Image 1 (tube, rainbow, N blue to C red):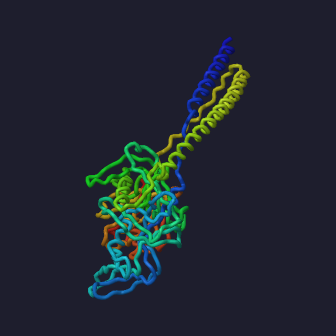
Image 2 (tube, rainbow, N blue to C red):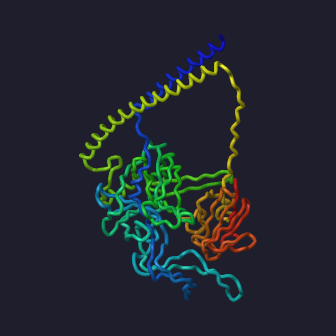
Image 3 (spheres, rainbow, N blue to C red):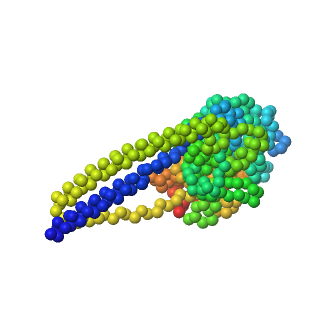
Length: 487
């Protein structure tokens, strides 16, 4: 009797479970909206914004009276960021938005003719007493210009129409000579507190996407990098600049690219990375985009039409069409949900019948088997770079499998040295972490003064050196020592 009663109780419990499953299915699958996902079409509005120079440029060193040409240059790139097109729906765009700091150096010099730039690198000479003398290295550029790239070999020249200040509203409005059919304008929508917690995507051409694993970025649509996250909060600083704090990583080179929501609307312009690690075991990195409200103000100021986010068009006809389509989609979704519920219910019934048969056959016999405990996961240590330079105050910086840069180029380097730091090139070296070996890979990027182990061994350019946690290296001078460690 005891065995039969046990089987009946099991059967009752199984049937109760069946009822619960069917009720849950009816709740879950009726009128459930489809989950949103990244709209890949958004990439068709994103471009690389590059400061470039043409043939005839050269690198020179000067003491103020005489100069020496160090290298003749062909066409090349001085710096690069990202941008996105704005304009009316279904029309070829001519205007695009980026950060002012992406094009600020162009704005500081003449648009054409010979332009001299201080590279903030130095060449070492010896005076008559044998003491080192550091002379500044300059880039003398011919036909310095802003280029908007569609792919590796296809670009157009752009001009600055209007801009804010880098320290305030860090935005710039650019214009091509003529409209282009190679990209499209993106819709713009102001982010509000209602959007906090929603998914967002950072688009652009980050500098660390150009590495030995991916080869050089070709600036094509398929080369646009996408990182996702959520909106943490909206903030306004004491200068009245509205920013969006996100946990989606914004790398150097993403500057000026769009921050978009799941509907493909531009809600911000990727701008700032704030990192503060007072303790080796504490990593803090905050990422900020300028709210699209400032983009709209810039466009209205210059009488530039734009697509309002959420509509996809400026016409009422499109709105009516969208409403009609939405109604049709709802009916279709309802039919699909009904069929889905029936299918799930049938499958559940079949499974329950099989379970009942097996339970009845076992006649209440109990079988005990040892349960294997899931091993607890040991917290993985975080690879870090600690700068021992006085100007960084012992700060630590996170590093991953993608190489990060060290040098004076603040727009591209994770650890950036101040302008005029002797021995440090603009992009001096790169560092990545190999989780398979636990090694840090340090590569000198043909720096002027070299990268060294602490014993004085100089790195061969473009050859990665393996360092273990706790080891150190220096860039140009031992005052610029970097320690690698796992914390």
